[in-house]
Length: 70
Image (cartoon, rainbow, N blue to C red):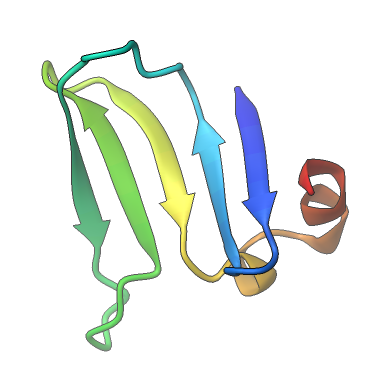
């Protein structure tokens, strides 16, 4: 598992497995309940969860983890 954080765009990616070159993937938006999309789930073509993209990392990830990942 790997955590990457980009404070300039306030996003983070939690990677469970690397995406192989040319591998088919798709993203599934997570509905935040108020019309917003706070996260995207990335799956392989066979349905394996590859990672989670957090689109409001400053709010969603504890500061300690953000600092380690930056």
